[in-house]
Length: 115
Image 1 (spheres, rainbow, N blue to C red):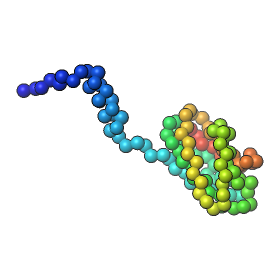
Image 2 (image 1 turned 180 degrees about the horizontal axis):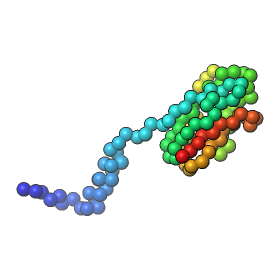
Image 3 (image 1 turned 60 degrees about the vertical axis):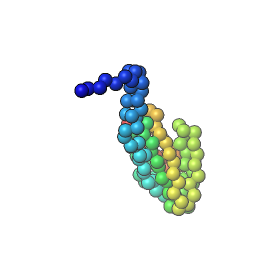
Image 4 (image 1 turned 120 degrees about the vertical axis):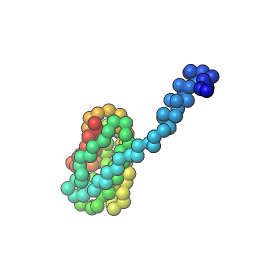
């Protein structure tokens, strides 16, 4: 014999929506290791997706560079890059397009290409 649920339809939809949101694991951020040397950023271009967190790990490997600071103009962020210490920069792109990053003197440039 089949039982018919007496749960109101609205409550059933709320429960199903909550279950669907909790069903899958959250997407881990994409990580990129970026070396900062006398010739700039390596790699200087990395891909990203709208709405997915990206973690850029910058490691400055020389004092023979002006890239002692990282500037992300569109995010209004400046981050110090100490010698031989990895520095994580986390971003969640909100729109398609390029997010540029530069050294403090705007001589070295890199791009996060957001799809």
